[in-house]
Length: 131
Image 1 (cartoon, rainbow, N blue to C red):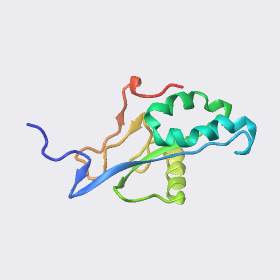
Image 2 (image 1 turned 120 degrees about the vertical axis):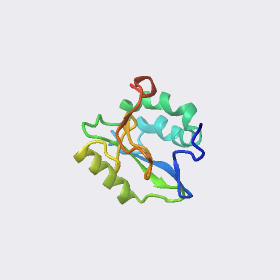
Image 3 (image 1 turned 90 degrees about the vertical axis):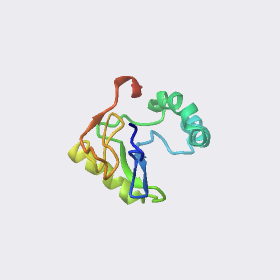
Image 4 (image 1 turned 90 degrees about the horizontal axis):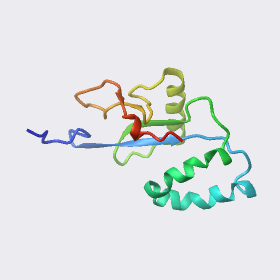
């Protein structure tokens, strides 16, 4: 019998994923080298699913390769808007401790707070972007 309440809801609180991406640009935002990237920002944000992967494949044209974690995800109550400081804390935590319920990755993630399960989950390899 299906669960009557979706796993991402608990006690009338919806949880959504927050995500932060950090990068070091190779040039100032107004440099000709970054013109394609800057031009793609609005369309990518507006239709991320359709435009996200092609732009990611070109990211080495605009960003330094980072050796540390540069993307972190975490669960937030619907309506909460994380501050920049909170996002920075999540990336620092991920770098120091690896994936935990406090901060995790697309490959290694955790269910929402108050979920029946709390263990680390791994995404199937075909779900991740290997670019």
